[in-house]
Structure formats: structure tokens, C-alpha cells
Length: 325
Image: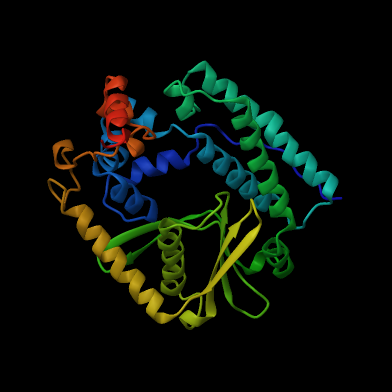
């Protein structure tokens, strides 16, 4: 039987500190691109406002229920992979999964309800109703995802080649695309028995999106830049949707890498165009307009900064959703 040390991850992740550091010098990442594409004002708060305002820093760390489930699953998997070299028997697996729910999640839930410094749910911050069924669904996502993780063929393959063949696991890495610094963090990358590079991204969501494609292309680009493979065709990416489970594998080609490079360059250029001084990476809030999409704004961590009176957003939302005569 494999012994799994049960550790409770800190509610206020040190990865948040990395994001704050990244903002001091311009860098590109898939999440940064996604934030900018969603709303320029949200982008400003996320990468520049946090350097000046403690309240912005606090709001940035709010976690919606679905994101919380994803964080719990990812951090549990990371901890397991760092401390184990074999898949434990089902009894030990279940003990770990239940400890995550009953210890970590319950602790963070109580902390969020208390409203003190540290972990805080978006729903608690904005007094959104959370039904008992929502809680059951949340716990179900976490437990089902972790159970499927232990059954994953990707996990078996990774342990089969042993840790010496692992290339990266939840490490913050960087490289350059032309003059653009790029930061990313792979869930897991390893060299399989056929000497191919396999890049794995664990997912708790139910479907693919444009963000996933951008993210995974960045991973492949890094692998190629680091010389992990002699050619692009020796690299493959794996999106592991643990909730189903479903595994989407894509083989990488040179055109895919070339497209990724152009995408990063264009995206970075668009972001830099709004900066007050691109060389010093300084920004002014007035240069980053907020969007006019109440459906998105209602789910934004920075909602109270853009709409100090919550009812103003709700009224606008009601008016826009009213049927036309």
C-alpha cells in the first residue's frame, strides 16, 4: 500500500504573488491574453492596479465556485505527483479524496464565510445565493475529477516511465518569442516510452474553448524552444477532461508552432498599445475601457470597482434582457 501524506494547501496561494511580480515587467501568458480579450479594464486591475491598491489585490484573489473546484483538483494532483511514485490502491485513493473535501474545502468554506483575510469566494463577497444543490455539484466535481485522475491512462504512463523522464510539473517557466517574454506553467510534461514529448493539461471543465487552444499551443511552443524534441512532430498535447473523463490529444506540427508565435506577437502588441509607457510597462486606468456586457460584468471580481452601486448594474442588465416590443 502506498502512503499518501495528506497536506492542506494554503488558501492564499503563493502563485498569486508570482502574478503580482509578473506585472512589474511586461510578459505574455495565455491567462493574460484571455483577461485582456474579456475586458481591458479587468486586465488593468489584474496586472497594474494590483501594484497600487490593496483592495484590488484582495478582489483579484476572489474565486468563483467553479474556479475553486478547479484549484482544489489541480493542487491536490500537484501535491500527489510531488510526493508519490506509484498509484495507490483504491482505499488509499478514496481516503485522500475525502480528506480534501472534509478538511481543505470545509476549512476554506468557513474562512470565506467569515470574510477575514485569506480565501474568499466570489459568491460570498457579492452575497450571491448558494443553494444546497450547488454545494453538492461542487463537491461532486472535485470527487469525480480526482477519482478519474487516479484511473487516468496518462497517470499510468507517467509513472511507467518514472520521474526521470518527467520534463516539467507545475513549474513556472519562461522563454521569449521575439522580444516578448512568455510565462507559463505546465501541469505535466514527460517523455513516453516511444521518446515522444507528452504535455498534459488536467481540466475540470466540461468542454474545450479558445483559451484552451491558446494555452496548449504555448506549451508546445515552449517544448520546441527548449529543444525537448528534434522536430515538432515528436510533441503531442493532451487535454484531460477529468469530469467525463475524456482525453483530447493533438499532435503538433511546425505550422502549429509558427501560428502560435504569430499569435503571441500580435497579442502582446495589442496589449502594449494601451500602455502609457511601453518601455517602463506603466499604465493608466483611463486608457483601459470597461466593456458594456452586464452578463460578464456581474461575474467579474472587480464588479464593485466599476459599479459601486450594485443596483446600477442590475438595472442595466434587466433593461437589456427585456424583450423588444
